[in-house]
Image (tube, rainbow, N blue to C red; front, top):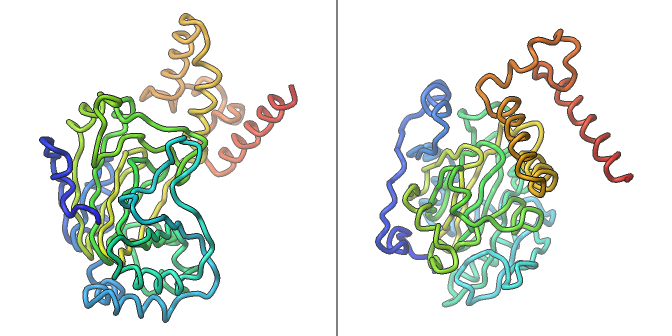
Length: 349
């Protein structure tokens, strides 16, 4: 069972709590929260949702609601043997994961969670990022989220107690607790060097994760993690609460309770995945001589990282700038086409 207080599991480290906002409107969110690019707690954001109120009655009540509205179609779910402490992670080889992925209807997942609720050492059951309207038709119409752009797809995370390794998202994220409790330990993006990132292309959930276990950090193997903890912040969320996490912020997540339900919203993704850029840059630049790397660092600073980067091609007529032109859907498509051609040329060699 997950420790109810993550701070106790961090020894002498006492992370700062995240700032808390209540009664947040879309205007306030855009003007005072998103512009800061830092995580915050959105207290009581979804307390009035019908599904949240059902969950506050009992797990049986929310389980009945889920089963009544569930689609019969199978969806992916992660299953893990008892005795692994609820941590969804790699096996020792770091080539495979310690859970199996199966296709199971939502109603059967809920039934299994209720059955496991009475087990002393339950099997891990964890449905992650299922499109809400696919598994619960009509969910987004009945449970609105005014802080995100219209049409943003809600996703459902459902399971029993679980621990998810520190990772980052490629989109902005609002995650809303409906049933059970969640704790988030968040780290700024610049702590990447102290979080010991795992493989980029072989991941437990689609994005790279930290190899450190925040519940039991091995500081002999991962000594710089102590530096990351100096910048960590903690959020403890109850039903109705939400957290805003800007993209690329690292977050470790603990879910507790026999039926833990979370709904999240991802939006505002970059047109080209930063991981694509990272992989290409790593493979093409890392092995170059120092002088060449220094030269390319100047290129990247000028064209990508400088505050003046958007104006780097103003000296070229606008209709002749190609992929370096104004950001539009047509511009993004031109970039994709160029990258496809470059990759095709590379693979043909």
